[in-house]
Image (cartoon, rainbow over all chains, first blue to last red; front, side):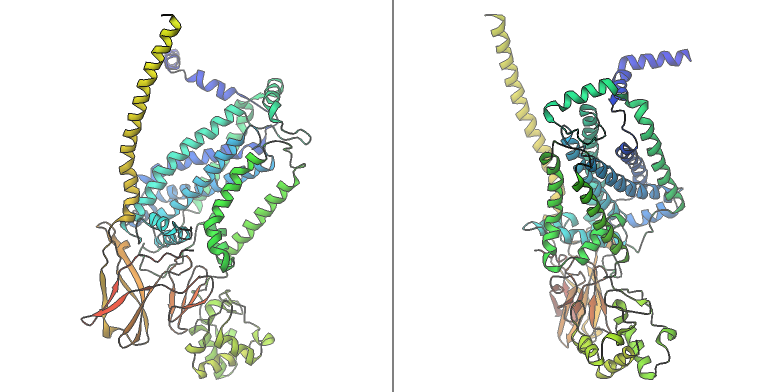
Length: 463
Length: 169
């Protein structure tokens, strides 16, 4: 024991570890910084988890367009605990996105971004962007049919940037088409480029916590005054501050460990997302959609008016980024308490409602044709005579059912036709089917007169 | 010479050397950066072979039908494997007129499906619809399906392998 202590003393003396760590661990923090302050550190915990599991995955993953798919199969089905490893990395990514979101909302609601912590917020915005970049490139490394088509969708989005759009799209795909160079690119970005930036900027983000101190919980009527704030903060700490370790840190540890435990449990009991069909760009039976945290953007693309879409895709992220960066520069002083800044609460509720609604729509994605629809059952069709029964089978065969549902079967792109005869007469239905309109294509040229009559016979029984 | 003067002189000599080294270091940095940036952008400028790919005998396509044909893309690499494949919806309009549609939706590039009985192309992502001639029918796409050059040689239908069409503003 004594020997070990001697060895440690020697190492500590020559390296100065204690001298370095002690002031960091013991730095004073405001006394009431409690459970709302745990989300940033939990994000860091999960980030470390991501780095470790990422290294684990890279030991098995083959980063080439040709072999990635079979190595993913191997990791998932053959490698010992490989599925668990993939699961941790996947749920860890989800946890990071959620925690960053909560952390950001907390900082915004309590206006912790004001003087002198502007750079904390700005570096945080950069970290948010990099994390989304990790999420997207990571999803593509899951190089199945969905990964291949999602990279094409990503390139097409970049294509809407004015002037340089095509160049950026080709930059993403590594050429004019998807191919051998594409995956290497995502791998390098996901594994080297963004992580290097993340390490650096996380370092800055943490250093700023030490330099400027964590913000005290806001009090109404106690505005931030840049001229006097630093001195006031310093005196407050000297009077009332408590050491970070262990007074504040135990909460960070408790919550961080809980989050990691939840991620491990999800990975073990639910497992990673399934690997889809092989990454063949000639396989068109793919239905690419983003992982859950980007589903709301997927919904946005389906629902916004056609005329503004290109501009939203091209300038939307730019404008959002600019607003986020400008926020602490424009509003760097004054009241911090949400009671005195009611708009901040309104804005957060508005954004959450908007994202939540789009997300909900994205999960349902009613605009996507339902290619899995089965022919209408005899029970749904009913005993309606031979012509109408023929019409019911045409309703499936001609693809009406991909977009229209009847008694719960079919797609939701177009109106539900369960009771269509109650609101449209035969003439109105004919016009609609033959000419189309709105989001419905015209079927006039692809239906014979007989087929049209049969379909109408069938629809007229729907009331 | 006073001590003050001596120090100032020393400082000038040192800062001159530092300046020289900084410039030299900067040049070396640029020298290292060039091949790295080169590796990043090289694939964009890689000469792509504009090759005509045969997709089948003329007689194997029915007049009025639209079928999926698969062929090698414009820039296959030795390690591309399955990802060097690409596809097109090929329509035989008349005896000697073929149209090759891109499978990529003009909206965001998802693979459209041909619904033969309804004579439409449907996109699974956001519900874009195209007519049998590729023209825009409904949904979010800003225009119709792109087309690839197609020709008949020695009784074979050939499609010109081309980049994925990118919709721009």
